[in-house]
Image 1 (cartoon, chains in turn blue, orange):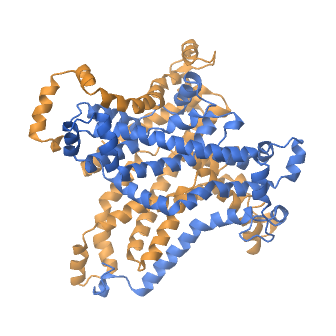
Image 2 (cartoon, each protein chain N blue to C red):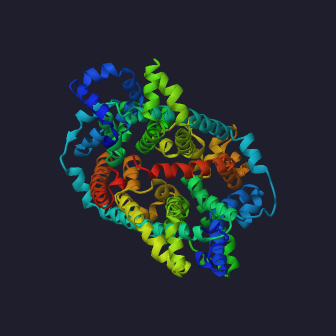
Image 3 (tube, rainbow over the protein chains, first blue to last red):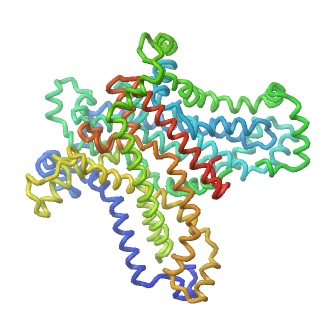
Length: 304
Length: 330
């Protein structure tokens, strides 16, 4: 209605209220962005300035030392960055394939046990065994703690995404297409790959984005399952550094004594630089992310 | 789902019904194979732990690397773990915190996201409103670790912006500066602010979509009758959003025994002295398991949470189904 130029003024709020609403939103938007600017500001400040005058938005003395240190001396950080990228890519591809295959089968109306298998997945949304047995399964039974599998396996299947995908297949892939593919002699799997997948691309993209974000931002699984410092991902190194700033010293591969490293270490600014590097990819992909997320959330609101 | 079956296929299905599971398995080999990876993952990740809740009734000790060895060698102790757990004052503290925080998050989250969705719909300027939505969504994309850094950059006692720049600028003397990470009284407010900040953009989207779906004829008719825009919001927008608000709230109530681990664990930096106001069931279970190595206590608290959560989800879903069967989870 607001785009209708001929509409009565009763159909819009008065300029005063419109202005006030803009003020409210401007303030709130700033509140969302400003803390990030603080971290970015600190990461570009000279270390000594930070120590004497505290964190500030605008660097009093500009410096790139923190980033230089991260790239040069923070072997562990560079490795963690690579690990995070790899886990995110592999995890997302595996997860989307597994979810799509399962969701497709339970979306098929001619599959007799679709309700049983839907329920098997769905039940995990309403009841879980809790942290302790879960932890025991991975550390005491499967023994995949301290391996890269620990980053991926627990996050592969998410009941909510399965349900979203099932709804998506039900509403976007007509039965008649599947049937005609069968009549043409295509096997089930070929039908799925060549006919169903292309039709479901938008849904798959949404799930892929959710999972990309999940894998990239994950720090809970390493907290629970990873002890070996060589296997830390970026978020987990960030977490370690937040609780103990000295951690950065052990993360660097220098051979001198820890005290010496600590003295040279731009610890305050370096950890903020790491934080910026962790959000960097998300900010770059942001317009893309936001579009599909909003779409995905509205898809998810439609129940199958 | 059932209703959409055509009669023709319905008949076809009935003839198949005579055959059992093995017949289906043979006929739809490929379909079953396609389900296999996901089934394997949820078996390991969800169903084995469900069976594992029995740990809560054992005095669980590590005898070796093998779970079954540890499980069978550990003694059954009945409800002893639960008795220990409920005898500690912590049981009350963490239940109270978990419930109160969730209630605060639900109420504040509802009011703010509906308010923002409504006024976002009213403002003129397509690009500005896109910009507002994008910035509100930003916190949602950050990990709790990054959020913890932002909070730390503001509140750190040594270098934090608030204590080093903002408060001194406002004339607060150096010895009157608050110690944020040392004062339990401040955290209910900080955590509520942080949580609202992180999720408002996300929650808002659903309501924005719902408002966009309202039939414009209602507003046109109201305009003809001379109703002002605010009157329209009160009498059309809000009433039409109410069912959605009720349903989303009930679904959230079903989850009040669970809390966001990252918010309570990482943003607070899990500082022990803050326990009184930041301890929730999820962080308690983690600390008992990983820091105190008290498997019995941790699993008892965990099962307590799972059972309470299960009952609440079932009952809130029952109510949702009475209001609108389409919106119910099951």
